[in-house]
Length: 479
Image (cartoon, rainbow, N blue to C red; front, side, top):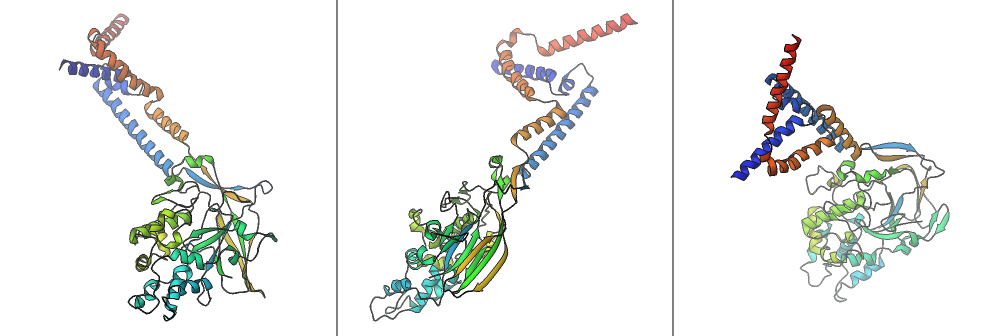
């Protein structure tokens, strides 16, 4: 009990001592007994108002810092020194119902138990819609197969192995490309167009960081995109389809890229509202793709939605050679039926919107290195050749670019908050040191040897009385 009493007395003495001698503006006037109670109340009101105003200003500044730290400006580019930027190009095979696919025919013939079983064209249509995304329509998974499930002497739809069938049927690089040219100079297509799995099936990307770190017979579609993007079934703004033989198209584009100041990385993601390609952690799990982009995030989000709804995902989302442990999660026939009934094989684009409530919103941020690509013209015509060709032309080397920069840094926060506190309360770094000094060193000192020292309050009262007596005597002598 005596120890608690001693600690309480020591704390009271420290509190009075600190309030009397603190460097904070106005505190000394409030606790000094030499002043009349009205003066002390006046300084209490002034100090209270000053602290309230300071806190409100700091809160407003921190809210502004949280929401308005990053700005995007336009700057000129020295075209003689800056390298030429060209977007990534993706080529994906499309299915065509009137086309004969020998590999698919061979695959389906193996489903016939004997020669007496007739070839089932409904099963062929089913497999075409499973393999080629552009042929899928809602309800196709069930409509083509249900009537044959109880049949003993007919060809049935396969129940699994769709990713292997797709790899067998879809064209490889040498079948998809006939010739590639850069500035009218030919180059090896399959050396630079590298494969990657996407929501639209296996595609071939040129100039993409998803396939390389540094880069120096088929119906298809061409995608123009940023170097960290991938083709996606829901993102078709820069997607161009080639339908028949002899179809040739020229696409004219302009490009405006974006540069980021180094300090942009130090800002919280929710503040800068973008992610760099090496920031691969997503709200619904780490991505299996090498780099982050908006299209990668949307792909992984759709994959997460499919897993949650049907406990499996579409075989197009299985990254060959990189996600072997996920083979058990690839949908079989019943899983595809579930995805079909849920509308998750080719969902509506509104699923990407943050306010969409029909499922799990994606909340995907754009890439911090995402360029602005515009199509300024398209010219389509037919030639006498049997191939289909696409020519992409960058109309002009960009003379301007965007720059994402930091308006307020962490040091600006320290300076601004310190200035507000110094202006309204007289606080500084030494005020913090002073506070800890009084309630640590002084407290320990008073607790240990406090019995041998005179009471601070009594000493202050005695000093105050002596000062008042001296002032009174001085006035008397003058009179």
